[in-house]
Image (tube, rainbow, N blue to C red; front, side, top):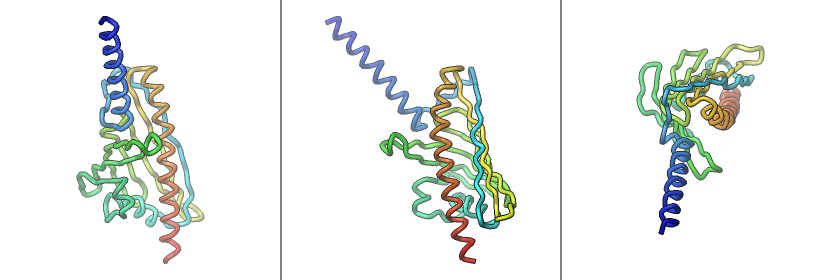
Length: 189
């Protein structure tokens, strides 16, 4: 019977660890203990877009400030809207699409040059990001930069490295989508 008690204990610990991991990955169980904070840069990533800066800004802002397309409504849900600031939930597929990570962020708009993001809830306790738009000889240069922070010293730092890879892949995909849509809109005028 002692072996059964040990087996149940191991299963409980393993199940708890698995649940904790899934909670972290999906953003359902944010861990912000404020101890051993380490930060790392995100980006920079830069893309040149053959469209005016105002068009690029409008493409970025539309799912937050305007009417989002059906595809964007599956990714972005505005929870609260103010004049130049929104609180939005972002859904990102993880684990080959079997899970969905949900982050909640504030998004601040400074027309037509900047969009700033600040994490409220997600897989790490701290993310601050910006999209900076500047005029360029062929249209607009969009530069993404940010900072990701984790707690618990080296353990958190390793977790941050895992999260940062997926985070930056997601941003790169978003930048590609912004480029395509802005250039499509610019070609229509």
